[in-house]
Length: 85
Image (cartoon, rainbow, N blue to C red):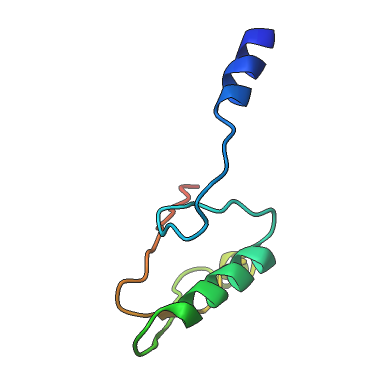
């Protein structure tokens, strides 16, 4: 256990916050949405809006916590996650 902690601790270093390659991990969707909006506003160009078209059982769809609208600009980085139930 001490070796694992030492190895992880050796990776600590200041990050260049201006880098577009930096990944930010947050605890809630609200924080992620806020951070993503701030980053999107800083990108040059027109905002494109995409509306979700959900299909399936109403009860299952109602339990989803996914945003129904997606805003993107050219060169926006996107991470796509798929949950298989």
